[in-house]
Image (cartoon, rainbow, N blue to C red; front, side, top):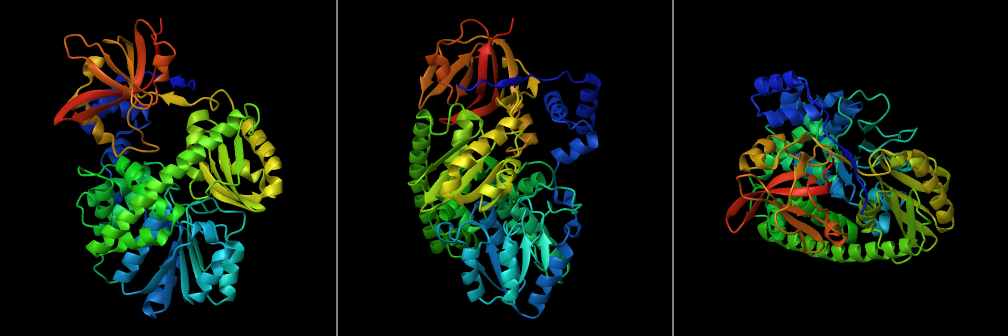
Length: 568
């Protein structure tokens, strides 16, 4: 079991807490968590607590945004054919569906094309160019891809096809020769929030487009798609992303889109949709289409207005997702076996493994599981003949794109962001890449990054945990990457009864509370604490608080993240 670095709550100025409590009309515990997360200015904290669309920046603040909007308007007004080309992940699928729905509403002659992972590879690649050119569009608009497709955009121009590139990944030193490039991360772009997902960039571009037209278009009805793509792409849920997801969840729960609701039905979601449903239930089903089949099926689902078609497509995506889960589990086990055999090296700083039998569509999921287990940046490569396609995942504090840049001469292609990337390389370069990747990671590992951090927001007593507290904390949602559920430290608590292992290695226990019923606790994947000999005596416990609903009963619960013997 990985040792975690406990980052205990720092003392907070009580006068500051009183000010936040008073000016924001929030309970003390909410004020304490806001302060712990750097929201010490009441105005900034108010924007965080009450996100709304007025907090979004102007679309024209995006460098290249005005040129992109003008070029799309030209095709609209002259009834020229527009082709939307999106990546095959959830971000690209939702962004493509968003663009299609909006442009069709505006009367555009618009169609779409999604790359097939096993045929074309990632993004706007050379392999997909013949299919794009054969469609003979006047304008190609990319979603969530294209920022590094310099030669490909040049070939499109040679075929008399203009391109508007919209992306959110890190650009290379040179930009593609498109009529417009919209990416908040491009050099010189002063857009205030650089963390938008690809679907967020597209939403902003379409906002600017609709502002230029006299059309009663309510773009906000598609914020459910923006929320889904944003959460699934694991961008920070703060700033503009928080606004988009907060508002998008409201749209989702109006349950107006036939396709989204058909997918929710297949996922067994009957209650209010929350951000975790998007991350763990809906997102993977959409992803499965692009990983194993055709992402176009997912786009068709999200733009469908036919109940029978939507139901059929949702069932197909659910089936693909179950197949994806099986393949992913097999891939992970094979990777773990290879590590045990020493294939990745002895205690490598960065893990690199390759196999002839791995499916390139699911290695990303297995790679993420490796990172969870070993807390080391990892690369899994699916080999096909003399070439391989790899998926890269990192840990907080290590920018994996920086490491890949140091290996650039060994790679035929790579791209992504600090926490995740994709690459391709020749089989003969895998050993050298393994060595150089591990060395690059090793230079960046230190005591802070080498172990997962467990950062706590506040200290609390077990007797304070009740349904009212959970309701107060929900005001800080939506939760996800960059805005996790509040983490509490409980000091000097004692078990009631004996801890035990339930399910697939989960820890179940209860904590004593003076004058109150015991507090139920669950620790997912923490059964090793029982196997190794549970600490005797008082404990320090770290976890989230939640409500456990079972048999129509609601009871407070602590989800344990870690525990140890109480500090003296």
